[in-house]
Image 1 (cartoon, helix red, strand yellow):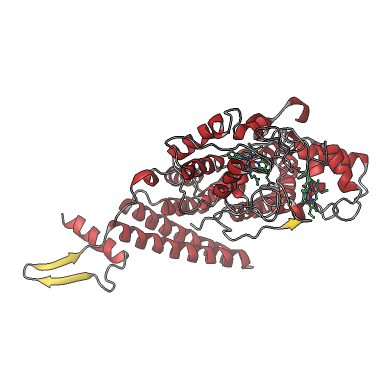
Image 2 (cartoon, rainbow over the protein chains, first blue to last red; image 1 turned 90 degrees about the horizontal axis):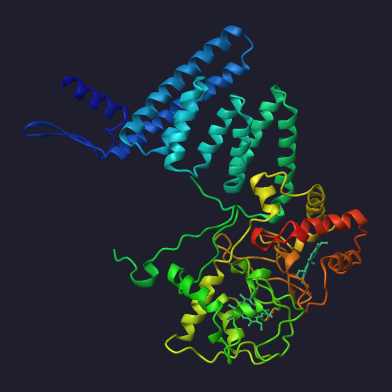
Length: 213
Length: 280
């Protein structure tokens, strides 16, 4: 009982629940916690996760631009720590709102960055079960497939994005280029070149509906 | 808050091809499954004509991608129309209807034309007991708005990555068609390969006319001969020769292979239900 209360209070704290308009008020029989809705709590945890993600990505950049091996290791470790904290935030968000596909998508991204491709793809799959047209998750999942060398899945994802969201298809195309810079696959390379040419060529004869997620 | 009741409360679920936006629908003729079903029956209903022998489908034959195979349309009494019958596939997106500039701007208005035209007499609509003309016109428009297709080899290749769908020659033709050298896609553009279109993303597109003629769609063009607003060109080969000679701009100086490539590309724009062995 006591432990659950502490948990609730700390999660409320983590969710910045003491902001304007809510919090505690004192009444005749003690403190009353004005609850926020599960959706608000989920959104707040999700935002915390994004903050950790942002920090993690900037540590990753610092690791990449460090000359000394020691610094690289130090920043890489910090990036991992931040990604781990992000996974906790997203899991918390999903605990509040089990249909929050955005959090599942970001959870997949954080897992991938931590090298856990199995959980990463599982998280993307759950997000896409809830919202099958969620292009950012299709794109992220394709990057996980790419890292696993599952090129047919990655290609299929590109075609799907090409049909529903050409901006996201362009993002995935950049990931393909980056992959090809360090991996060799002449068939995939030819496929990428052909799709790139088609994408620029066919602009004049298509109209892709845009959806802001 | 009150929620719309009655026929309009039935919701309509578009089944759109990849990359196609929903067409604009007038606020006073919302899509409903019931209207579409009535419209489809009316489209083939010969009671629309003066002697019970003609329907929309007499000129817009679904087996020919909703055209008639004639140079110019023939009305119910055998009179010749001045112009060729266009396809209705993807007509839902048109900014204006028919070939000419002083044309109706909505499908609803367009559909009153064959009902009442006397020059020539197209249908000679006598009226149908118990069915208001507005209902006829609105249902027909709802049905025609569902005639949206894009499952040609071109679509399978470009949108689905099916590399076997389009031959190498047709792909060369695609490149040539989109190149500045031919300039075809300056006029035949967008997902309908036609003049400007209108849909939920671009509500206020203006029509555009070259020599007074609206640029028609090239989708399904291989099965909608003869060609041009007056049906004056019988084959696609002859259309390409017309452009090659400088029919709409500079002469193109096409090689025999380029000529064949453009024809192969145009052939790849035929939707699956209209495909015949000789144009695959």
